[in-house]
Image 1: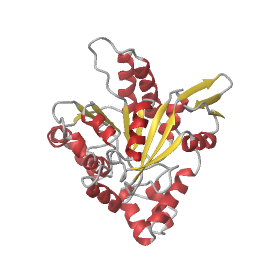
Image 2 (image 1 turned 135 degrees about the vertical axis):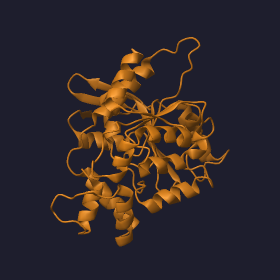
Image 3 (image 1 turned 90 degrees about the vertical axis):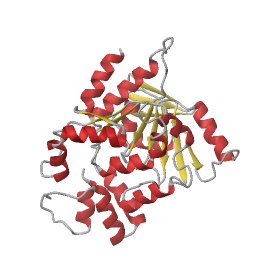
Length: 326
């Protein structure tokens, strides 16, 4: 499913024939918002994402298995236990589905497009029953049960399970929202899934257009758009970026949104970007640039972002990492 293609086709900028090169999603979304409006953009992208059946990428399934094994691993003497945080710009719910299908509980935070609201879900206990059902139990004992082969039921549970909302603007020290957020972080179930650019099932949460990206970056110094607890984890934890090229707009815009906490211990904590050099559209000039200048680009990424580039497919990297955990 290509959101860019569907947006441009709905504006009659491309015909029914297979398109050639397409612009990045942020540029297509920006043009769509100008031609229509941002509310229509949010609604139409949500409709596009709900069309058909979304396959769970192999990398997400491997990530779920890795995190499940890490969560069950005992902390040895003298070994530091890092908190397990996944930050994603993926708008659909395939990561959440992968986690639930792995029988793993987790906590989800969804950042709103305005940066003023944080929507939270706690999936406390997840069990896979022999009859092909998933059972998700909340902290209060209420449970949801649905068949593994029903993505619609799964999405409903993802949206509704132990749902809460906190105002980021009002989460100043001593406020009720701050107390609620602190309580949530005190009782949450790891891993933590932080959807930086919104989620399909959360109203008005998408950050899609170039304009929205710049607004998010410009407002982040003025108030803590990123929760302080997540910023602390980012500042003190090794990071692996999966499936993002250093030259991608999505990577750079996400980096600058999180830059304040990423720069705290730069050079002291290792950070990696996993992406095979030969994966990409051969007609894409930025892909050709990255392919031909891989070594120089890798050196630049280390100098500019403090990130070491690994020439591997994400699913292979995660599978090998999981083998080393056992």
